[in-house]
Length: 506
Image 1 (spheres, one colour):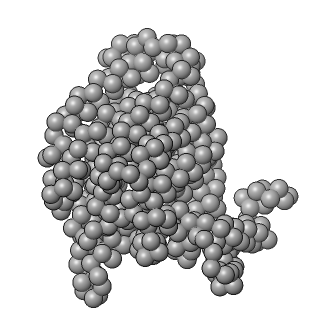
Image 2: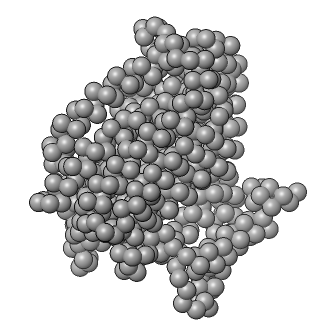
Image 3: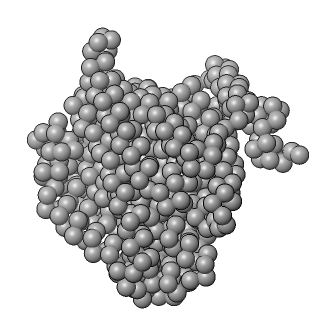
């Protein structure tokens, strides 16, 4: 159900990005909107889904597992009150400090581009605050195993932005159109909260906050701050990426954002879906320490196999057929074939870290289920520090050393992040092994998955070489369809259980 909800919202999100690319391409207005969106998005990511899930769900699900429903509801209402107050203050501060925030996030912007970015930040901040409250709803819904609604809710946010852009059309200047899209984002944020709130209130039996100093609330806060800092450290890395891209030629900020939409799709659809579904289950584990460790190992290894089966072909497809994927999604209007190839290069570089990044999410969920939020924080600091150092060298210096155009430094930004994600995964796996015992992916399974992916790529390339010139969308349907069918069929023939279950082969 998590996967279904994420898939639905991501499909609409891809439509939104295609509409956005049609109107903006990689223009100055596109750079301004993407940079502006990152600043209030910082607030959403700091207080939003990942942080609240890691700090709130283990405590709330634990209370419910011990039949303390009334106490769980009171704690949830108290957390909502604290969250609403804190976010309101931060939204107001963000609106007032917008010009100074631009200096931090996009110091390379000047003139009209900088002024437009400042205005967009001020519009977008209230919407980010509403999305934080929406993430609190997600925590409650997930704890009650109501997965679909919480992950499908972003559909209305995407539809609001699409509607705003289509309504405004081509008759307005690009900067004015970006302002309309920003107001559409705010309206969509309100709708996303509104569609979840009635079910949440019913599950909680209303909002009757318990004592703010009660032990359950204190437990949430103890869990919250290490995750908050860890998420902040990771967000700093994302913002450093934007800062680096702002010093590259026009279009780099937008191109990195376009690539990240594709790169994060399997992370969200596969890594997040498995991790989000497992967190309340792992948090509800009872018994002796040895019994809990064995239970966690079993769930972890099953989750690792499922993630790998889904992510390995994503990596292969992005690297070998990334222009097909990018062209189908973005190539329209202002977004040219040259832009498609540019985004493909950035996407291919990012894919280096795709598998470890998704597997790392599951390991982090296991730590959160153990109420250990500090270990993932320490490892996140290492990852971010390494990513920033590598990004600086690969983005700003390597292209010149190799005699390449400076704009290709954008691929260095995402390559650095991917390499750092690999280091983070290794450290998380090692640290958790010391707590519950070693967990790993079977090497034979990994070999069979990559073999199947290679056969899928080969089949896709053969079909591609024989096709006449087609519009990017039908071409992608044919090529990626053959790629996916070959991957699943090959994996089934090689005895991969996930593929055989998918095809219902015993």
